[in-house]
Structure formats: C-alpha cells, structure tokens
Length: 293
Image (tube, rainbow, N blue to C red; front, side):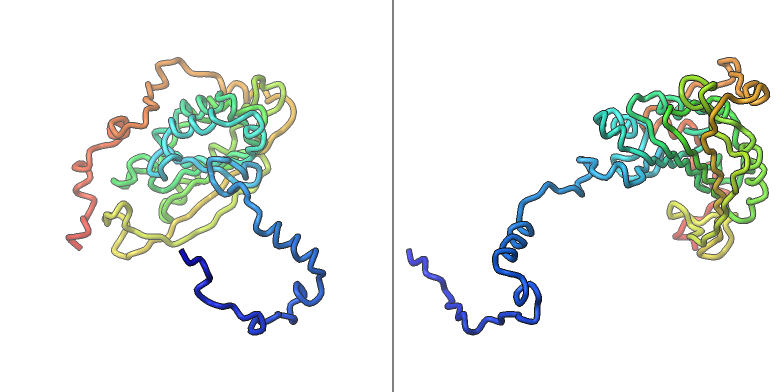
C-alpha cells in the first residue's frame, strides 16, 4: 500500500510568523517545552462527578421542579453521602430551593443537618413565589415558625441567608413574615452554649425583577393580563455569634409535642407531592389554559 503523503508541503511557502514573540524571541528549546505542556493530557476538572471546585462554587439543590440529579431529598442526601472527608471539608457554600411543604416544619432540614458530610460554612435557602402554599389560588402568604424552632445547623455553619420571593402586591404580607422570622436565634452544633446564628443588626436586602406571568405554561387570573409581572425578593442574613443564647431565646426554641408536627414523607415520588397539593381541578376557576388565550 502506498503510504506516501497525498500532498507535498513546501517549507518555503510557510509563514515563519516572526511578528509573534513565540517564534521571533523565545529560543526553540523553550518553545518546545511550551508546546509539550500545552498538548499534555489532563484530567477534565469540569466533570461534575469529580467535584473539583467544591471550595469555589455554590452547590444548589432543588426539592421540587429542578434539574435531574439535583432534585429531591434522596438526590441531595446521595450527593453528600458520596463525598470524601476532604471533599466534605472543601464544600463551603450550599443553596436549597425549597417548597413550603418541604421546608416549613423543619423535618427535612433537620435530616440534612445531621448528615455527617454536610458541613458548609454558608447556606442559602430560597423560597420562590411558586413555593408558597397554594400560590395557584392566590392564597394569603403564610409560614409556620417550626423550621426556626427546630433549626440545629451543622457545627461549621457560620452564615444563613433566607431569600423570600413573591409578587410585588404581596410584599407587605411577606414582610410581616420576614420581620417575625428575623427575631429568632438559631442553634448550630451540638450545644447552644458554643454559639448560635443571629439576624440581629443585619440589613435586609431587597431587589426586584420582571418575569413571566404564565407559570408552568399556564396563565393565571390573579397575575393580570400582561405577559410579565414584577417580583420582589428580600434577603435576610443570620451570622454566627459566639456564646449561648439568652433564656428568652431558648424558651422560644422549646420543642412542641410530637402531635404538633405532622408526618412528612421524604420520598421523592410524585405521589407524595400530590398529597400535599390540591388537584389541578380545584384551581380551574383561577387559571386560563394557553389555548384559550
């Protein structure tokens, strides 16, 4: 078989690129080292499974309506269980997008906080507009204080941010919840004597944005006639404070009787979600399907 090159390459026709310092200034030996390093094989550090950037990135998890592999309690627990001790130490920032029925009574947070490999320094919890109870039927905003009462963060937690989002006309109702929650002191570690989280003196941060009024492919009567509507986000911050809580703060955290906390299924199946929300038919008077517009 003829293995000769099909095309003759004429060296005299090549551009020596002398305007480039790589060819005009650097010695050939150094240039060869540069080429060797540039072409060396390497491990793909962008592959998520290697968890290469745990220290630099914020790792987000959704407890409903999120990307595959990052959605639901089981996916979240699986991620942390697979971390090595070094990876667990390197992971500094975590964010949870939590629907109210997953968040309000504090059961799932309590379970995550007691996962040995869960020990971030900063945790952000985001409550989106569509995470509030029965937003589909324009139900008034409400949030129990159980998650605050039962909050017992991992020992290394030094900052908690809670992002509350709603539509602009419901801001006043949301702010009552924000201001009430801000008064709570939150436990970290095994003992409240070693320090706690406090939002006392921290500044609330507010910002607004315009997004679609049709959520889930559906147009809702209480969202108005426009294609977009204004959302408002308010962020509160709890920071670590050395020393024990006051007696008054400790009294607020007294655990209520077990019957106060309804049983909560942490399974990620669709059935558990459906049990917590009304059937779509219950909202028929509030929604307009796209095809009717």
